[in-house]
Length: 175
Image (tube, rainbow, N blue to C red; front, side, top):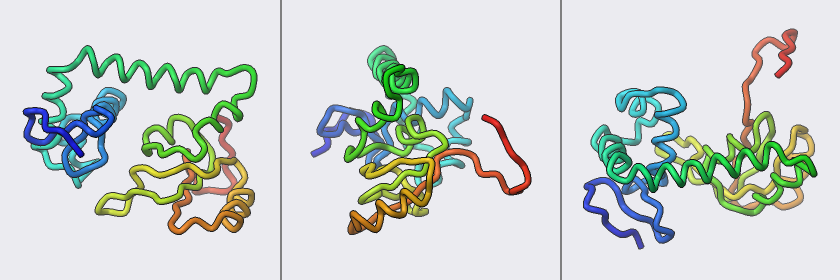
């Protein structure tokens, strides 16, 4: 059950995380995109057409009024990602901590860069873009992911490649 906040388009989820009402978009995710890409409210609306400008401005107002608290949450998320990426013992093993956990697309993109990801029960927006799902498998090898899909046979699933596509197969990019 979501709790109201006094902001027309913002509710608190059961875990106390502020969400844009009627969506799975967390206020911190919207703010992180705005900060990372330098997007205006209009550009956020272009990138997320299922959000109204009113919802976006309400989220930004909520952030402005709760900046310290939400900045701590953003720093916690960024710290977790840094820990995973710099784990000297076993980076892949650290990423496996998220297996069978529901993650947002933003979290998936931060953790599984340049990998194929198999999600169970994906949540999509009106444009069928994946917003979140339970991570069943991640790998750089698409064939391995297909084998996992055939083995577990989830009732609904999505396969994502997290990274940049190269249209010309003759071009090699070293990242």
